[in-house]
Image (tube, rainbow, N blue to C red; front, side, top):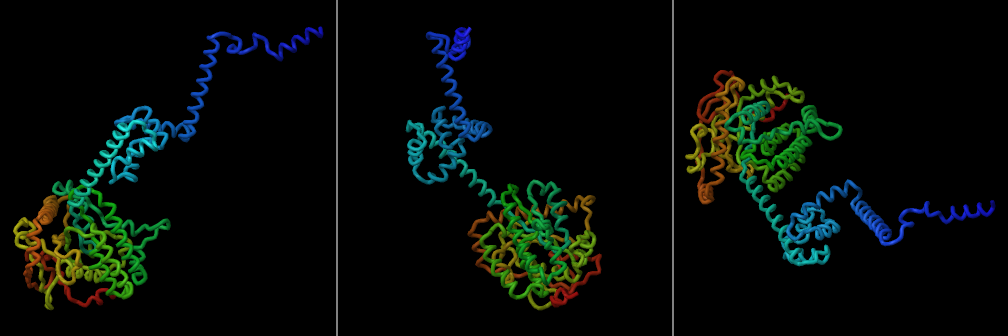
Length: 475
């Protein structure tokens, strides 16, 4: 009937008791308690959602929670102070250390205590003081460790291994320095950065190949880039912990040998050599890591170097002539074993100071000399050099004894230089005040060797080391 229809309509609009939610139909204390619980749950969910939004999502929130957990290890930090620190952006110990370094290092600790109370909201002063003390002590300890590491690096010695193209520097470094008991745990090897010269930038330019192909065009560019890569390499290897760093060649062989060669060949003009010299000295002076504690000169005849170069068949070296190698050899000799006087076959070498000469082991006593002279760069005056005979072709896979002898000489040279560095400054100043006598060693042709023996008796080599420098470069 119409009346029944009206009643049904009213029930649909107002809702029958059976259709209402349970929380609304129940009356009394139980119903009100459940409703309040649901409201609290909603609030908790809302707060959690806000925290997730502040943290940048669930992953960031999880990471922040993991980082902030370590805050509880700090004296004075409980759950409440942890939350205050996190809300102010300090989610871990690292952030508090950085705050101390940036704003409070070297100042009174009270400043950080005040900051923690006023800006972070740490209520109790003793809590803020405990946090500050912990962070300060942690930073101080890290600085001590860093200073200790720097001190050990300063005590570390650097030798530069010098020699002509294909004399055997790579073999010496790989097979002797890297594979012998005497040197394996002593030495870190830094090879010449040839790979950097062969592959430059996204276009993979090969400046080494360009220099050999067009020396007039690329001599200065190449030598400039060689210097840059040596600086990069020195920085990259400066953090090593082994007592001895062996570097293949140096900025000094670049300047004393290769730059001289290209300049005398007119591949580098007067303006370019002036530019090179204008920045070489100040840059070297500002980077003491480039200055070695000693040199190791691997010595062999140009003929032998040329034969070895032909065997290794490096593509860029296809145009390198024997005359060019002979010129480089002479420049190594005049730098590392300088001659005195106008007569050919007369060579002078500076004697070591008495107290140092007596400390040399017999195996290297006649093979270690000081670099000095007017031609020598000021930063390497009085730096000792060990001369090693690399003329014989030795199979280091078979001749283990020869390999051991080379390694032993390097190890003994290391000990000698180390003691020299540790010698009292009074002895050093005394030696500077006296003029070192010169050992005059007459010799007729061939390579001079320190102990008077001729290691090249089996070869037909007889070099004229005083020929004009321009002639060896003209091909």
